[in-house]
Length: 62
Image 1 (cartoon, rainbow, N blue to C red):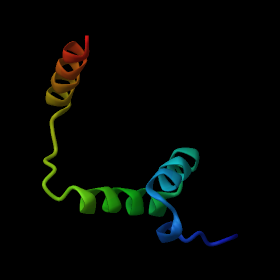
Image 2: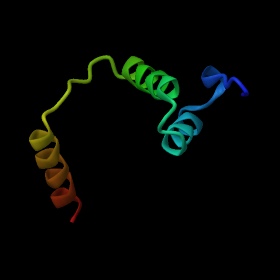
Image 3: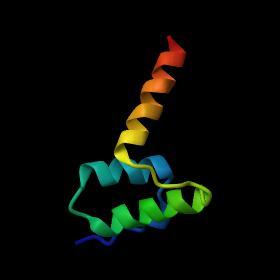
């Protein structure tokens, strides 16, 4: 099997790969780590809070 170098992939290439290969946990973790490093101030949200925020954003766009 060919060993992929996830570090050489752009964020969008890696995301596409992760979506196409959900069984590749290492690729998923590399992607998540990369996104966390890009937004160290990000705070996890409860699902209900995220849905409320999303609905709020959609309402403002109308």
